[in-house]
Image 1 (cartoon, rainbow, N blue to C red):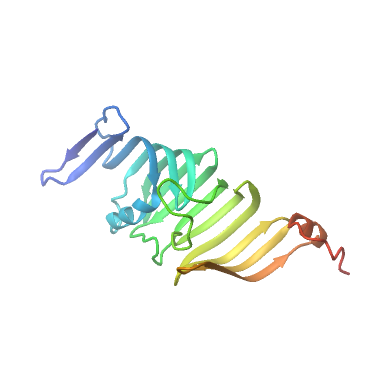
Image 2: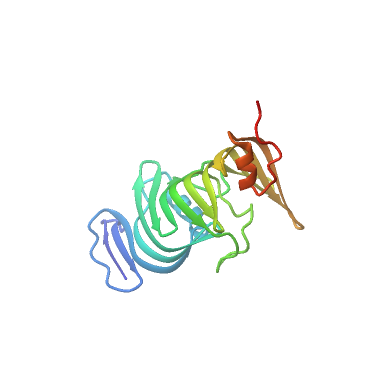
Length: 231
């Protein structure tokens, strides 16, 4: 259901949309407010639309939604609370779920394969790769331009440690630029390139791996500790 307040020229001054049942209350602020519940949402289907509709700013909606299943660019997240507010130059969204807690900042005019990134900062992220109900298998072509900082990440039940990187689209894939991570007692810095064609996917890492305890790191990587100590 919906309720609105219009200016004399017919332009919407304030609106309120309620999803998932119940009556929408009269809007208590200027702009559009979207609230209620959704069984599922595919973020990739809306990112470019919202970015283009924002134009030069000021048109982002205020959002308060409970989402049963959120497809976060190929990574499914369930039982999600989403709270979004317009801000200068874009939109700030707080996300809270059992497996994900953080904020997402989307700039005005955002394009998933454009030049200006959205910014994801997460305290924790417990992710599962693979197909979702509405997308193909995770692909380097499906990942958007985004700056990412995750303090604690688990992927497919593996503790991945701390990760920070800049996702940048390239021909036939994506690059993880400015990669800075700490995983299995190893500091990882550099650039990871992931591309695909009609036949197969390829990945290439250029950078450094540093560890203060090489034997322990090798064991955590399930490799034989052939070096115990370097003097």
